[in-house]
Image (spheres, helix red, strand yellow):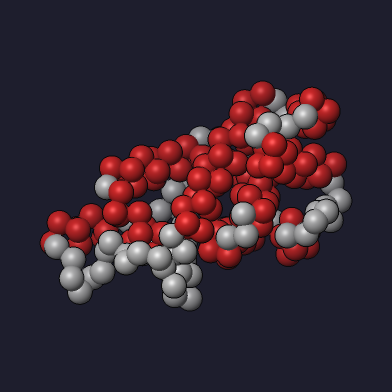
Amino acid sequence: MARVPYYYEPETASEADKERYSKLQPMNIMRMMMHAGPMLDAFLAFSVPLFSTTELSPVLRQLAILRVAYKANTAYTQHHHSRIARAVGVTEEQIAAVFTDPPRLTSDIEKRLIAFTDEVILKAKPSDATFEALAAMLPVRQLQELVFVIGYYMMATRFLNTFEVDMDPNEVVVKTPTES
């Protein structure tokens, strides 16, 4: 159960809030983040390029997001991004592998990506060996995009965990900004 009341409740919301919320995905994270006003707008604005202008493959991006969600123990993100991951071609085996320690991935790039992600999460930066191993497989732009993805989802998972945002009803289907 959420630690604080959701900002947006349809039955008590002002007309202005109803209009604002109607432009958002009908998700509990959005209902909670509405307390923060312009911070929600900034959070959403930053998500758009993560999904629409990055060169990092959608599969690798989703594997990193799922790993962040797993390491943060955030069921909300695990649930929603497992669906998104499947939609971009991540297999059930890959999803399951990311949710294990050590991860049971088979491809070299996936193993290196997860090692990189783990070190960014746990140590604030990857070791030289981990960085160089992934840098040998990805161009600089994609490495930087990966760090932005990891950081964004670290922020999102910490928000979700701090406020104990409830899972959305089963009928809520999360869309990436490019699907909206």
